[in-house]
Length: 197
Length: 291
Ligand SMILES: [Zn+2]
Image (cartoon, rainbow over all chains, first blue to last red):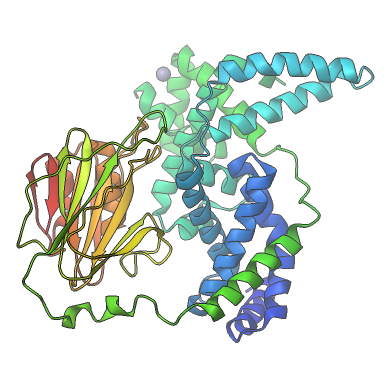
């Protein structure tokens, strides 16, 4: 067990005894990770902050039942994913906008950005544009695939960790991630010249 | 090797985890197939690009926002009346009153555009023996017909993810009410979103729980899936994949089963999932009934 996992276990144990200070420390340790995950899933800073807060409330409510053989971070990812799926159900976060529409809006946005900051090199604008389109493409993925893509590529979880988090067979995780990447590539097809770097 | 098969191996090829023989076969296909070759080139670019999304700055008040919510939850928990649903646990011992004194109808309709409107729900003939709601399709609606006894409490929830207890503790509460007979209840329908969902109905005095699976509105492709699966997850998948409404009356611990959806018809999928669980299924009135 790594030192940080050991620390986590100790903090979790204190939380389970009702120690608020320990929970405060867990939040300090994991809020940035959780927020980053939530932001890439929702694409919206406010929803992401809400999702993060909601997840920690569930951590607090369920910590008594947390079995300490799995890692706290794995458990937190599972809770975050469940909160996210519930959020989708409630707010229908999924966008139904087509990527072509996005490109059209973005062309004018880029124009504005670029004329507003004429000194900034073209390459930065293109990079920002790429990131934005990529984020939008991720939002087009079905929820589970979205969670997996963000876990793997943004949060750098391994296939094994994702399988444990989502309680899915390893082979399923791998084939679904491949499917998700194929889908991203397909969604980004109309703008692929932007990605030829 | 076919193009489809080659595509399935793109990630592993790029991650260099393919075994020698397979790797050669894919590479040979790419060499001979310009379409896949171009696909794979674009695939690699996207693969490598995803990880380069810039890091993000958390809002300054995030910590405070989280702890405020946690503290409020802690306070709420303290204030909450102890075990508001204690009756749920004593259901098995509840006496069964015979007289049917009230009927409630709840309608759900899958809408594409997300609008909400109140529409009268067709009222089926009252069913006198039923304890759990009778689930029926009528004019595009799914109705839950409750046969209420004197002052019967009904609870409707939706979704959730922790199926260790039914309905899941994290399911959203839709309605909780006491039916004072004679009473008829109709709620406006709503769009259920892109993916399948479950509506849970609990009736006071009945030890089983009704789970109504409603397919999502989005047309999402499904890849074959094989492996161990909880009964609820399996039913959600079947509901979505085959666009069927499932009415399941469940009791006790939720069994773990196996799923092998490759090329499975609806019948096959249900047979495989329910095999060994003690539950059986039949179809009536356009609804799959699991008992
Ligand atoms: Zn090919």
